[in-house]
Amino acid sequence: MRQLIEKPKIPGRKKKGTLVEIEAELLFKGLLVGISIAAPVGPIGLLCIRRTLTHGIIGGMVSGLGTALADALYGCVAVLGVSLVTAFLLGNQVYLKVLGGIFLLYLGYSTYRNQPAQNPLPPAETGLLSFGGTAFLLTLANPQTLLSFSALYAGMGMSKENHSPETGLWLVAGIFLGSLAWWLILSSLTTILRSQMDRKWLVLIQRVSGILIAGFGISCLFSVR
Image 1 (spheres, rainbow, N blue to C red):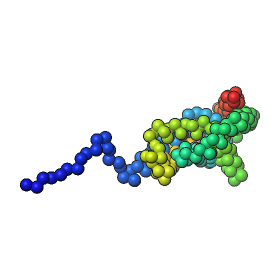
Image 2: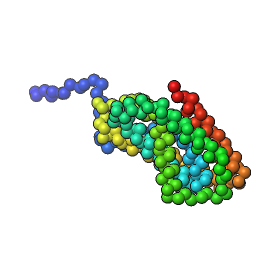
Image 3: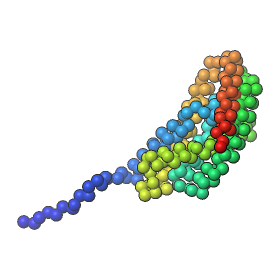
């Protein structure tokens, strides 16, 4: 009788998913990371709220787009392991914090001082570019975000041995989409709430936002060592 020879089983070996499944999983994880990084209330969130109140949902979304691009850039640096960029950002974080703190102080002062209009004012084309650009640079001025992405990347068990840079970019795409989705939600909710507010509430919110933004700027300057 002919005996059947079975191949020996390798203990602990798990069946990997297909490339499409891996990319979909990374995209979903990126969405969660992008939302978790963007959601905590900070100067960027206040900036988005303030611009939505002043210039409508377009002003808030363009600011959010600039932030999402910066988040994706930091995520890309973490995924690809670009040590030169990481070393530059962390090596110059003191200067970045000083510039970011000074800008937040100016932004807080101008927010407190300006009087909100009863109806949102549509921003000019140059204003939209400025909204996106300032949000992008302000997000980049906090290199700690890069450390957060690097820690999350390592915590997911991702490395060059487990994932190629090409598949890792699906995680970056998810980060961008997750961050952008959060700013869309925040801008939409702010727009809905604005329609229910009278001028007194708008002035109060604008002044409180100005104080908080300036407070973040002072905190940023005091964190410089």
